[in-house]
Image (tube, rainbow, N blue to C red; front, side, top):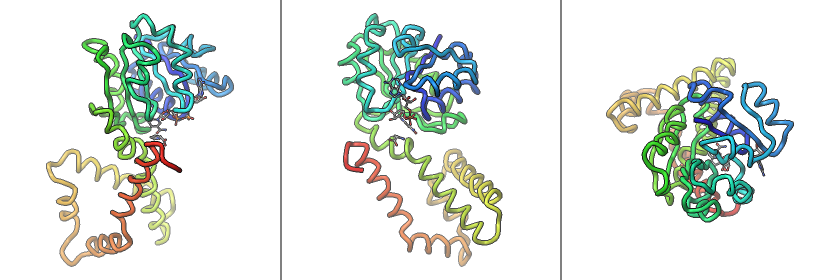
Length: 267
Ligand SMILES: NC(=O)C1=CN([C@@H]2O[C@H](COP(=O)(O)OP(=O)(O)OC[C@H]3O[C@@H](n4cnc5c(N)ncnc54)[C@H](O)[C@@H]3O)[C@@H](O)[C@H]2O)C=CC1
Ligand SMILES: O=C(O)[C@@H]1CCC=N1
């Protein structure tokens, strides 16, 4: 099974990095092309990937064709490669935010099997969270082959397309927000004399462990909060001060703004 990427920006590189580490594909079975030769060719050479000189060449060389370009050029690129997908033998995988299965099928043809996905950047370390929606043409072994791409680099969840916007905020964008939280926590450590490197290690490991506790214990986050906050202790004092500063409201407002922008609202 060969996979190809059209667009080799931040997100495609995160997916490719995760897949190579997981050994899901041999490097030579990964074909790439993007807008600027000066960036994709050295990247392909550094990782042993197959670089080709057009988007159509990626589609021709691959069983799984991953559309990883920015949303503003996505439909043009689909028009460009539609002839190579027309037989319905190749699987189109899109990671483009906001581009629906119907819009894609309207360009490449209704017989083409398509997987709409929204991965997050954590796929690079096999800890991704990816939403998936398949069209009617993608079933059985072919669906399994497409899902394997994302299951080997993290978790997946099947989602109705009208929920991709909220998913994009909660998982696609949230690594940036969680990094912001980790940086804030570590900066507070620096305020009290820790080095930035040590404070960042401490803050990141505490965040990782807390996420693992939520996923692996049968308790809801609020019960885990109570487990840490001793009566009359320091944690409850910190929690109340954070809430006075509006932590939960700030998070929900941030997600509101993310969803609004994802739906085409002003920046
Ligand atoms: N960055 C993220 O965390 C996530 C991004 N996405 C989606 O992934 C897609 C890519 O996003 P990023 O990697 O962040 O953007 P990016 O700007 O880093 O990468 C875009 C890539 O597309 C290439 N490109 C532009 N026009 C092209 C054309 N006509 N033909 C071939 N290649 C072309 C660029 O050279 C670049 O390699 C977007 O559609 C975005 O919605 C989805 C989930 C998360
Ligand atoms: O910022 C963006 O538009 C994309 C969508 C999800 C993550 N990054």
